[in-house]
Amino acid sequence: MISSPTVLIVGGGATGTGLARDLALRGVSTLLVERGGLSSGATSRSHGLLHSGARYAEANRRGATECIAENEILRSIAGACIRDTGGLFVQLPADDAVYFEEKRAACESIGIETTVLSGRAARDWVPGLSPDVERAMRVPDGVVYPSRLCAANAADAAQHGASICPHAPLKDLLVEEGSVTKARIGGDAERIVEPDVVVNAAGAWAGTVAAMAGLTVEMAPSRGVMVSVDYDGLGPALNRCRAPDDGDIVVPHDDEAVLGTTSVPVSDPDDYEQADWEVDASIRECAAMLPAVAEAPPLRTWWGVRPLYAPDERAGGDRRGISRGFFAIDHTADGVDNAFSVVGGKLTTYRQMAEAVADRVCDTLGVDADCTTATRPLPHADAPDQLDALVNAYDAQGPTDVDVVGTTGSAGSTAPVAS
Image 1 (cartoon, rainbow, N blue to C red):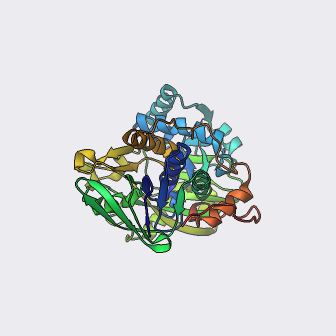
Image 2: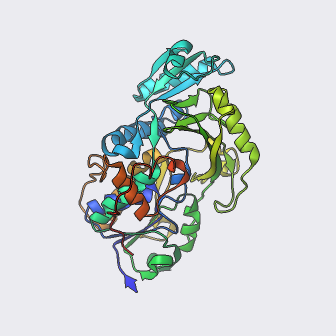
Image 3: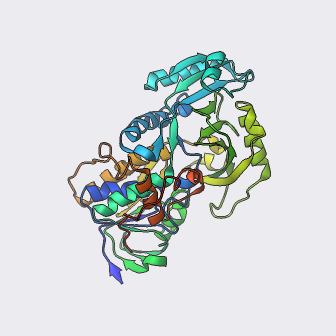
C-alpha cells in the first residue's frame, strides 16, 4: 500500500498530536505515526506539572515566558485535560533568601503573578506543610493530564481529515536528490508513504529518526523518576524555592501526590538504569516540604526521559542547565529540503511548539492559513468521560495520570482512528 499525505509527522506525543491538529485545521493533509500508543514516550511519563514559568524565571526568561503564555491558553481551551490547582514555591531554612527574591522579581518582570505568603499563611493553605517553611510564593501552576491532552488533540486532527496511527513505527526514510521521497511504516499501519514534508517530533528519539534521513540532531536526554504516594487533599503543586535539584516538586492528584524528580544523563532513551537511590532521594527531599509523604504508602513508580536538545559542549555535562525552551529546525541547510525537527520544550508549551513548526511547514508548502489552536477549545474538553474514551481509542494511557483518567465512568469510543 502506498499513500501520499502532504505531511508525515513522526511521533505521537503532545507536540506531534498538537501539530497534527494545527495542520489539519489549516487544511493540510496529514499522517501521524507513533511506534506505541499515543503519548507513550516522554509525554505520559512526566510529573504532569502545568508550569507557570516560575521554575525557570530567573535562569531562562525565554522558557518562562513561553510557559506562562501557554499556561493561560490551556486554561481556556483544555478543560478537563488540566486541573487548576495553583502552585507554591516554599523556602526552607537551608534555602537562599536572595534566590527567593530573585525569582520573585523575575516572575514580576515576565508577568507571572505572584503573592508572597508567610510560613503561617502557607500552612493555612496547605495544612501538611512543614513547620520549617519560612515563607512561600504563590504562582499559577497547575496539573496536566497528558493522556487526555494527546487524545483530544488527535481526535480533533482526525475529525478534520488527519490520519492518526498509533502502533505504527517508522522503519526507514529514503532521501533522493536532497529530499525525503519515501517513508516505510510498519506495525498496524504498514505501508509506504510518499510525503511532501516530514516532521520529526519524536522527542528523546529525535536523533534516531533524523539519522534515518542522514541528518544529525544532537539530543542529550536525561531520566527522572516520579513516585506517586497515597496522599489526599494536597491542594497546590509544591516547588522547593532553590535552584532545580533532586526531589523538589510535589504534584497533587485527587488522592495521590506525585513526588519528583531526578536528572541523570542517559545515552539510550530505550535502555537506562532505574536506580533505587533516585526513589529514595525524591521521597526524602519532597518530605522536607511535606513531611507526611515520607511515610505515605507508595502506589507506583515510573521514570521518564526528557527530550533535551544540546548541540554544544553541555551535552556531556550537567543537563539541568540545558534550556527548556524549544527549537524548530529546518534541515534545508543540512541538505534535506523537506524535513523539519522539533525538539526540547515542555509539555506546557506543546501547542506553541506545534504552531511554530506548522507555520514553517505552511510557508514551505505555500499554504496561507492562520493558526487557530490558541482559541479553539479541544473536543470534549468539559466531558471527562468522553476524553477518557478517546484515551482508550488511541491507547494513550500512561503512568502520569492513570489514577485519574478512566475513573469518570465508561463511554463508547468516539475517536476516528485511521489505519
